Length: 256
Image (cartoon, rainbow, N blue to C red; front, top):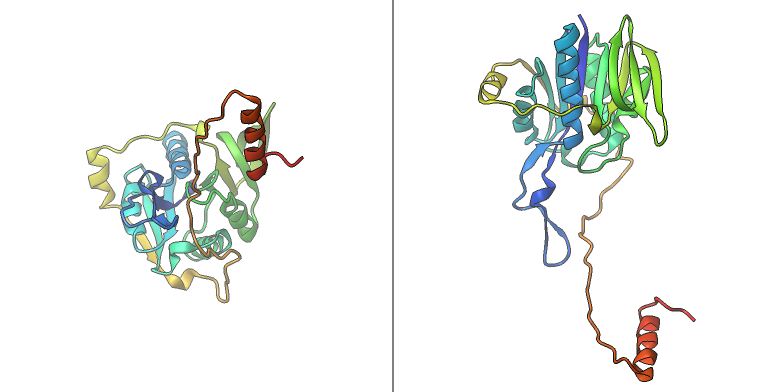
């Protein structure tokens, strides 16, 4: 039986992000959602299972808010979930996230055949977790997939590059990151949402963080860039032209 793992992230909905008075990011009234890119990874996992059978496990890493996200993910067609949450997991970098996923898969989700990731996450878009997990599990990784076809013992993956479509054939197990163009994610119905609460979930915590793992990236602050606009009227005279040149020099637009 084919075992597919879809790795997803519960992220801040950017539509609710507001600038604070001092230019900082105001997250006091934000809502959360399933990362837009990861919706396609989960949808592709479910579509593959619907065609050839098997089991889909959706895996997510995050703080305590990820429990709500797990219910949303299960409502989109996964058979079971693996929730790895801890209050200290709110600002993990890609290396830490990958280390946690590797530990959870090795301890609780083997054997597996296919691991799917979004091309990146909606918040960081670092595009590192998929390749890092593949390296840690010592399996091949194919990035930027626009089509996946499961064949006997392996998969055929199409990668849409700038001017060509590259076709890659690789044996299982394999990790694949998918582009948004690969599918159109389904919208869960009421029945899907209700049935999600009955699906099994493996609950893990901080014990999945590799011992001695330190962040490779430290977030010191989050700020929103401010764009100041100015409207200065110049007279259509020689003096006005000289004033315009002088103003441009002050702004650093002209250096000569």
